[in-house]
Length: 352
Image (cartoon, rainbow, N blue to C red; front, top):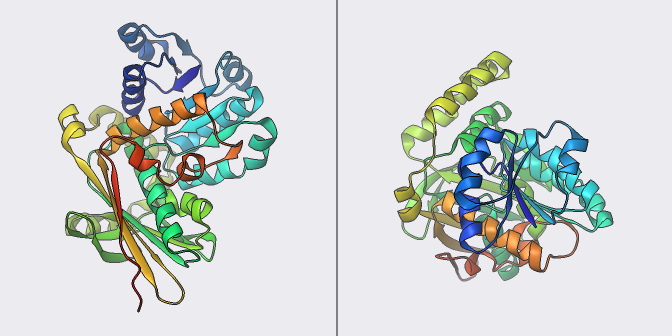
């Protein structure tokens, strides 16, 4: 049995809809009954109401569950308790985070997961399925590379949970992986022109989840991740240093969250159905050889629903070896191209 926690949220609802469309009958769960009632009635699904604050209550609500798909963010607040409960009850764990700190925390529990016979697989959404699979393919094409660069473009409209994670994370600045270690850098630390499949765009570094996950997928010691932004947005991103001190104040953080809750919904159904996401990657060998590649997917939240549902099906039917996984180590580097409307293209190796 599959349990989806945070089923009432923007992303959670999309995942529930996709799971039901595929014939699954998940248990839907959240911390408030009123948030679940309409969804449970709409699909005729069992619902469970419980907070993440009590380990005993949380664990007891996993009775009869084989896989948890955790969709309640920000995940830096919520994932640890759910992972612990899954370890206690020997339930496979999935989530749709893109947060470096969550990926690293899950990786740190690899030995526990293997000893308990369960899979811990965070990041089965747009964060980071396309980039992780592209990184794994590039690393296979040109082994023993020293630098991996990844970038994405498209979308631009965020859900409440995603926006909270992004805004509240501004205080941490940027991040890259350098010589195998995650290193903090200034926000928008580096800019470059990126050759996406449809057209070139300028991108700036951001602390995308692959700074963690791509290292565990490929072993590459240096990783930089970019988002394509127009000039005004890049300039604004560099100015966040002026507001970062304010985000350390609990009162300001609470106000920001209330404003997001009041004003943010997420992409419309039309946007989800028509928008496309573009992904670019490049690996560089110490001897100067380079290979790049691109991928294209549906709009990010739609891709998240597709890939999360498929990940749940695979864990229910034939889970990979126990322990911590990234999408590509769990399901193979071709996982992305098994999903609807997704494609990947790799270039030839070039020499200096």
